[in-house]
Image 1 (cartoon, rainbow over the protein chains, first blue to last red):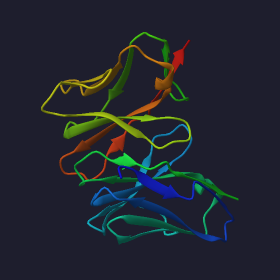
Image 2: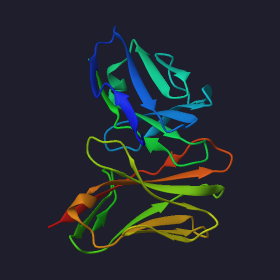
Image 3: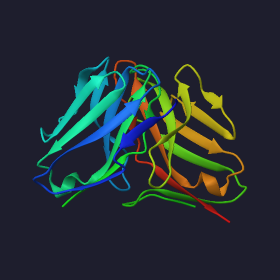
Image 4: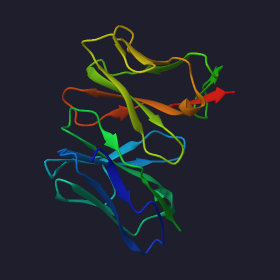
Length: 112
Length: 112
């Protein structure tokens, strides 16, 4: 298995909802990432997990809460989001923090 | 032609011609570079990478050139095909960082 999968593909939520994005890889990669991408912009790093420990949090608001239950899974818990949080949320993984990152297809999030 | 402005830079080429996409980086400590291709509605896809101890690397129909003196990276695509139409991002990382910094991206449009 050489891919990163993400669910759901699309998500529409209200500002009071709680939802979770999921990411999975079975390549044995030990680093996993969450990125946010707005239209016509490059991906912006949100969080980095290395060996299941959070190693980078790029000043992301607390309404985004990452979780790494094991080396293959990465979640992003969402609560009380704002309409400006609407974006494509990308998960990526890499063998280590010094190797190329492989991206999933993303979750298209719309906050109403 | 190529245009830069408030919108995503765009490069338009005729099918069968060669394409050259450029990227400038600012961190002189960057030592690893990747080119990604992102098609509409998909996550970025790894194309080719290069480390700072090299100045050229070739793949299938693609070549990456690195000029460390002027901090410039380019991606050359030979015999451009309609399937090459996408947004191309360069990404850089230094040996101490755990994350890649993405460039603004260039949209490649292949004209029939």
